[in-house]
Length: 475
Ligand code: FAD
Image 1 (cartoon, rainbow, N blue to C red):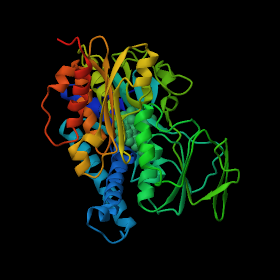
Image 2: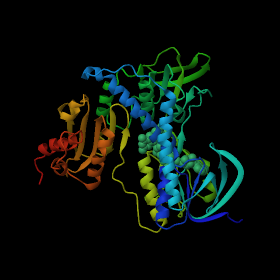
Image 3: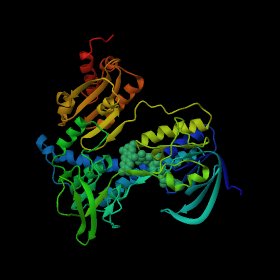
Image 4: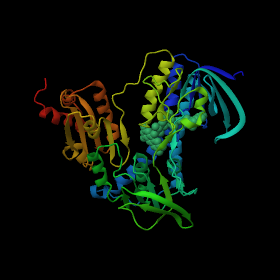
């Protein structure tokens, strides 16, 4: 059959991966079509992920900070929460960014087609058009013919099969809607997303239990970083149950009754006004009729790609959450650029030495490159250098000296292979560690770099000096 639209590149999904790929493809002169089922561009990250969560975390952070200002000699009265205003602030932040993307698409002549896309064959996608503020299907369809395609359909929250269908049971999207502040809230899952949302709701006044099936929080981060977070958060939450399984839940009038199993678990069911399920995200690979294009999708919904982001079908690429861990926006963006460049005939490839992770909690926990755990697994001999913030003038002046900065060097070459920071603004600080790893910097390079004083960033230079001092065979 004929096609309604023909293009060089069709990008399926307008999250950070998709819009980055589409913009780069258009900049390289390709006729680009961007298919997105939602009314706004930006995907999970801008609409219901990174950005709204950070808008709320900023407010939560300021509230927590001023709550302790009496100790510093400035007392505030109790905060008065106007939740409608807070919600509308968050929505304005999101709107500004998604609106900006729409403008950027227009400026580049990227044609945005709003609807659900699915493959018809290796060169056609059918889009069931959507309309209005929601994702309402209009019953109309458009067929797009493409020479190349970039799949960027992202991921969605994993559901727990035994959770009742009830407005008091939400995923991160529901929690970010911020309908009201519950009295008692359960957060299932002690990963980054669960703990960020727990931090927000705790600041707004909810009493919170966190339950995690594994024996640690923020798995993936080194335990010494997480320990500092745990110590600082001892009183923020009512309970943090580790090695505990959530086994059943029942919706009753007085709340959601949830049962647990494990040596730390309460033996009686607990009652909550809000339950956030944050147990991971699963890729959308199974929902785009990939088989009709011959694209292989794993049982779990992931699409495998090579370092040029090509799937098993040479002219079809995939990027972002749908190709695997870590499911992070900055990874999706870089993969999107590679896919677009390769589609345009350039010899790009994805060969990042590191992808940073940040928990925007209080304090923040950030890490990049190899963790100590990973270095050990690889049998790499490392040298560890730690600078405690208790010795940082700026951290002490801020009244927040609980953190530390840690750098990991290859013991043979003294080049930096990883680093971790726990403390306020750790997420903003880790970028320097990322650059150092990519540049192949060694302890002397970092230690001899003059950092501004007094700053938290200085702790990176000072940590390197610790290592530098302990290295006897440096040039
Ligand atoms: P997505 O952002 O998932 O976008 C995919 C898009 O494709 C969606 O807009 C979807 O509607 C569309 N789509 C899917 N199927 C179809 C179809 N068949 N037809 C048309 N359109 C379709 N990452 C960070 O790096 N930093 C953070 O601070 C951070 N915070 C987060 C907080 C929360 C609460 C959540 C949930 C996630 C967070 N993430 C964060 C993760 C980040 O949001 C994702 O890694 C990122 O959005 C992935 O981008 P993507 O382009 O792969 O896909």
